[in-house]
Length: 176
Image (cartoon, rainbow, N blue to C red; front, top):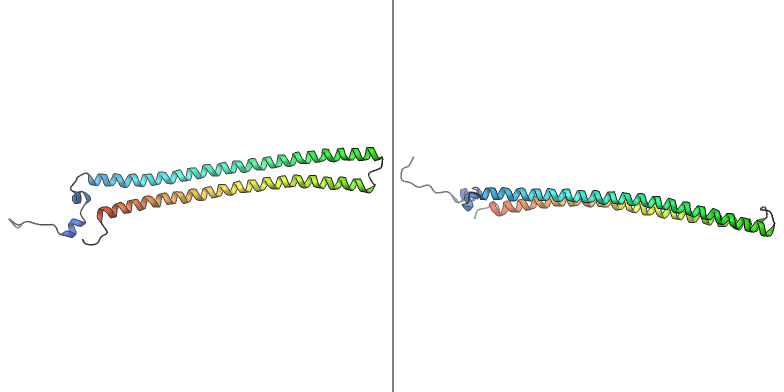
C-alpha cells in the first residue's frame, strides 16, 4: 500500500461506471430502472390492447357475416314465396279466362319463363348475402392481422425506446 499517493480513475473506467456514479445521484439507477420498466410495461399493454381490439373487430365481423347470411336466406325465401303466389295467380287468371287447357303452348311457356325469373331473383339475393358475409369475414381476418402487427410494433417500439435510453446514458461505446 502506498502512503500519501492518490489514485485517479481512468477516463475509460469513468465512462463505463454505473449511471449513479456518472451523475453523482444515488437515485439515478432506480429512476433508470423505473423508466425502463414503465417503457416495457407500456409497450406490453399497448400490444395487449391491439390484440383485444383486433379480437373485438373480428367478433363483430363474424356476427355481421352471420346476420348477412341469415338476412339473405330470409330474403330469398320471401322472393320465392312471392314468386309462387304470382305464378299461381297468373296461372289461375290465364286458365280461367281462356278456358284452354295447360297443354297448349304460349301462356304456359310465359308462366315457366316468369317462374325462372322469380327463382333467378331469389338466387341473386342469396348470392348477394353470401358475398356480404364473405366480405365481413375478410374484414375480421384483416383486423386480426392488423392487431398482431400493432402488437409487434408496440413491443418493438418499446424495445427501441429502451435501447435509446441505454445509449443516451452509456454512450455509444467509443472513447470521448
